[in-house]
Image 1 (cartoon, rainbow, N blue to C red):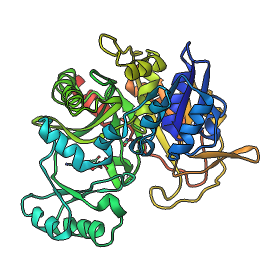
Image 2: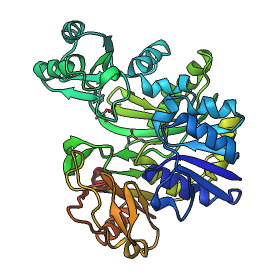
Image 3: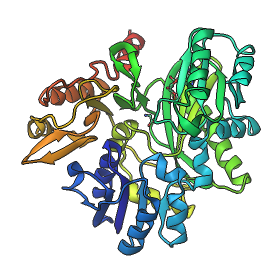
Length: 429
Ligand code: AMP
Ligand code: GLY
């Protein structure tokens, strides 16, 4: 099989890695891919948001399967285009990708199909927003409706901060048309977890639950990022919670989307708050999570290409997703200044030494190969991923590898998975 991956980050590098492990995959293409992937995939210079270019590339290369990494091409309809060209594409259509592309759409859908989520109201002007705030307690959450590169959400502890967030969106137009509408919602309390599921239009098969670390500094301090690390499986999602997620969230999404005439294929990512009333949806994403995928795919024993094809063809029912024992941890090495502005072109050393450690993989999220050396190219630079028999061992191994890598001003969180380790130690006492 010839398989094409769309995207260029650490998540896509992990997807390429998993596909290369399949006995039935003999060629992997990546568009645009990255220098870090080039050893494992033939990279083709078409941008991930160039839907016309990607459709033309796929017609030319005729892959047996395309997997789409990022949300933007999905919301722009790349899967619809590939399907129209007769190319099997793993991912939701544009109509389905609205679950991520419009928070208002997701909220309406959840309300209609009684899927547990925070109470909310959608507003379309500053005045309406100010008025709606009356109905909510504090803290209150203000969300731009459209895609905002992970920056569209403000959890406001005070009324003044909620009003300031509304002004930013409606007056300063910081998110442009993505802020034409705003969802105001109740703030949920609890632990967050991510459950990603493979979907074939009718059946949703959950992957191992994972936990992301969104804040830049240890102990969840500092500003939000694209994700500073992840681990799987997340013990906070107990088998009982997983059963509820399937029954109360995943199954109703599948049934509801089918009923709307837009059956959901691809990955459905449920960002959850584990509240005292049970799991509630904070957000849906229409794709693999980044960096959750980097912690989940190393544990997948089943063949990813096989599962993805089953999703495309509607043949997931009755199949089991097999897992390797143990746990996996992903530590994100970030550029100085990230998530604010950061320099590029810093020389990276120690990659080979890090990868000498057994069960370590280093995926490239934002690097380039220039003049015979690796240099930084993005904010999230590298993903150091370890698999081991226990979570504690995986954490130790990941940090052992991370310590061997260096670039000027590099920073990373030292407490990835710490919450689960502490909870586990307490439970054992
Ligand atoms: P998002 O950009 O949608 O991933 O949201 C960013 C973060 O905002 C989430 O990871 C949560 O920590 C927080 N958040 C979003 N919605 C809520 C909510 N209703 N209650 C509490 N926290 C929330
Ligand atoms: N890890 C969060 C995301 O992929 O959106």
